[in-house]
Amino acid sequence: MNKTSFFAISDSASSHSMSSHLTPEPQLNPFTPIEAVPTFSLGEDAPTAHRVYLTSVSDGRGRRYLGTIPAQKLLLSNQEIRAMAQEITGQSPWDWTPKTTFFDGWHLAYSLVTEDCSADVDAENPLSLGLLFQNSYDGSWETGS
Image 1 (cartoon, rainbow, N blue to C red):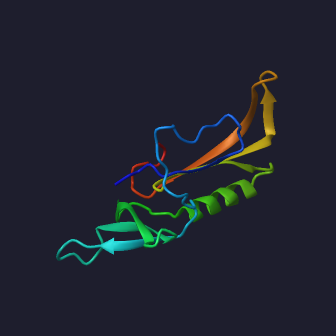
Image 2: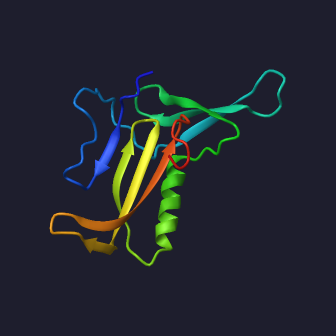
Image 3: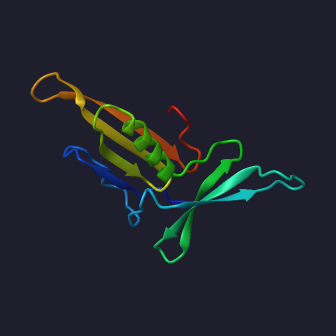
C-alpha cells in the first residue's frame, strides 16, 4: 500500500510539507468522515478489530481502506479530534488560531497557536504557546507519541 499521499496546510512560509521524491495522491480532506467495520474472530460474539475506511473519497471507489485497529483501542475520527481541540481552546481565556493541518491519509497532526501568551526571544524568533493534536487511522501513532 502506497503511503505517500498528504494534505498539509501551514501559515508558516518556511514549512515544507513533503520531500521532492514523494508522489502525492490527490488531496484528501483530513476531516472526511470514516466508516469503522467490525471484524470478528471465528466463534467470537464481540468484534476483535475494526477496519477503517475514509468515505466520500472522490476517486471513483467511494471509500478507501486505511487500516485495522484492535477493538480495545479508542477509534476517533479526525472530525472528533478537531472538535475536541476547539472545545479545549474555547474554554481558554486566549484566542487560538489553527496553525498547521497535516494529513497523509493515515495520520493527522493538527496544531493551534495563541499569540496571547508569547515572548520575544529576539527579533527573529518569537515564542508563543501552541497545542498539537495527533490521530492515526492505522494504529501507528500511539497516544502520547
